[in-house]
Image 1 (cartoon, rainbow, N blue to C red):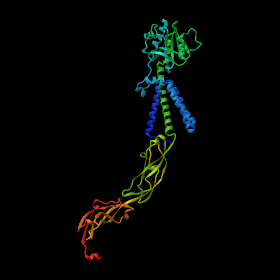
Image 2 (cartoon, one colour):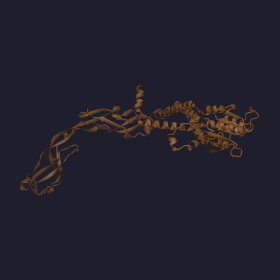
Image 3 (cartoon, helix red, strand yellow):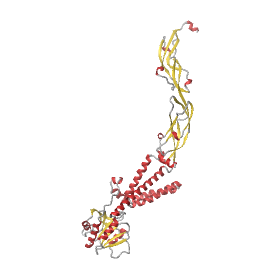
Image 4 (spheres, rainbow, N blue to C red):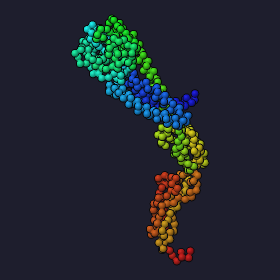
Length: 483
């Protein structure tokens, strides 16, 4: 249970967005290519990918290379073999349909018009082939054809198959309420058990239905008979009502079948969305979490919660090495500034302190785990700030004139209050002024001089940074020579 909770805690919002985006892309590809032959290859490619992952984890190096080569070659072959289907998908849709659109409700096929038109052609003994595709695409099966895209009516069907019309010889494709193509050439059946009375139209209808799930209506030119062909079933139809029932069964235009079809579509899309989510999650988990990677980075140590009046005098190290684990993409993008080592010194005392570094002191991005810290302990010497009064002394330089003697020097104030860090400030015995040249002194006088604080950790207030120096001089006499 704890492992599961740790896993969810390690998830970043970027991981969730990553999974969602790729799930939606895969789902959109399914929607776009749904019903095409290309979608049937997906399980095979998925199986190859699973085998590749299994071979990689088992350690089958040659097998892994072989499967990767097969997948790469298969990708190129699929693009070549299914280029027409891919092109038709991209040409027939706009940007909105790629990003968001779903297959709309099928436009109802005017079944009654088709049935009445077929029997009308039969009475006139006008030959005709009407093809109503099923779920399978006919792009790779039929040949030729002239785009028509006309709305179905009895007059249009009669006109298309009129023997004086240049496009009457061939089949008409019906999609929804449109005749999309005319003069289409269908593949002929090579069956030897067909009745001898069947001509080219009947053999073409049987040949098409041998390789797809389309419904073909054949009107005989010699006898005026109506025949329907679907899969391996050939039916002779004597009444328009019977033909309407066959068309309803094929197109699903009844209210009950429409509702059932909508429910099937919804269920199919829902299952596809869940499957896409599972697949992408599995891929993401395999790439980001499946194989642990190690990385060592050097990170500076930051000290926090230092008590007022305390300061760090010395530390055994200013950086630590963190040995981290996680996914390869995440560790590759990891920079030292994304990791922080914070040591709290709120409980430190003056003198030597040992501070342990644990996971509680380290801030890591989600998905990155700490394996080891070097060093695990930092030795710190802490000092507290104290105040002392230290005597001030003049820092003389150069030489006084030969005929003069410095008789007395008075510094005001003689001592100043200095704040510094303990231990350390106890060793400071004197505070000196800035250097004062003796060769500039010609007589008694007073001057102002700034003090020099050393070491730099010593501090004093502004008023004490300057002292007053009063001095007296006199000329040398004979007695001074013997002193």
